[in-house]
Structures are given as structure tokens and as C-alpha cells.
Image (cartoon, rainbow, N blue to C red; front, side, top):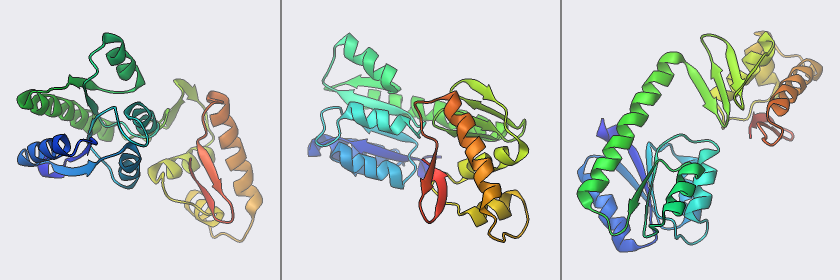
Length: 230
């Protein structure tokens, strides 16, 4: 299993970063190293990781900000390794979305045990998700089998076409779909430039998503190109 596990280590101290990287590589994990919050964000946007080991005091984006950004779209475990030992700090981090907390100076065996424990739960959860055929993005959960959609913990009813559009976008969240792509994929017919059909369904879909959570943006318009998940 380990050769398929990608771990991101975010630590600005070169010595600690190298130590953690070698430790994870000895366990057979694939390791990517980042030395700032900004660099880590670029890595998480470009690559899928199964776990993040994160320091808090980082140049650029702080560890806390990085956790917030990760949790907008990602579900992998985040283990914080920090010299901060205050109980209040730990509670705030867990509320932000961190999964575990290790205090510096750390014990190597403890780090390995925490990594293994969090990965085991995450892999098991993902396998269950695959079996249930759930698509998850931000606070949207779409069940492909039951055709149910939950947004912001609310069950939302969509028409067949709206559901298919959302399913297509969620299946490829980084891809930009033109109106022709959407029409031919969802309606199964050749597209002859009738924008109105796609526009109406997209408007209704967006309206229902926004009503479920007015504070969140879900579908982004890429002018001159089409639509993608925000």
C-alpha cells in the first residue's frame, strides 16, 4: 500500500523537514517537501496527497491558513507538528480541520504511529466512499447510486438534467466544460449552438446551490470558455 501513498511535509526548518522526509521514505511512502505555506498550497493544488505533516510557523501562508484552504476541497488527514503546546491552540486547530497534533520535540516512533493510524482510517473511509459512489466537493455530497444530493447538510432536489450537470462537474472538478461539452454529455445530442437550454439549467442549478449555502461559491464561469467547479 505504501508505494501508492503521497505525503506532503510542510516545515521551514530544513533539518526537521529532511528528518521527517527520510523517516517517511524509509516506510515506503512517496514524499514531497515544502518549506513555506505558499509552496505547500501549490503542491496541494497540483497533486493529490493522502496525508499532510504540517508545521504552523511558516513563511508566506501560515499553517492555520493552509489548513483552512486545504479543507475547502480536500479530505486527507492533516497532522500538525508544532512547538505550541497550549490546550486552546490544539482545540482551535482541530476545529479548523486538523486531524492530529504532535508537540515538538517529537518522538520518531510516535510520528510513525500517528501517520499510520491516520492513513489507515483515511484509506478505509475512501474505500467505503468508493463503494457508496459518493462524489464530495466542499460541502456537496452527491450519491451516484441513490441520486441524492446533500449541500451544507441539506437534502436538495434537482431535476434529472441538473443532477447530470452537477455530477459531470463534480467528477472532473478542475476541468472547464464548454456549453457544447455539457449539452452533448448531458443531453446526448449534437450541439447546434442553442445556449439557452444550457443557460437555463445552469442558472437553476446555481440558484439551488446558492440557496443551500449563500456563503459558498460552487460553480465558476470561465468567460469565453465555459464552467468549472469554483
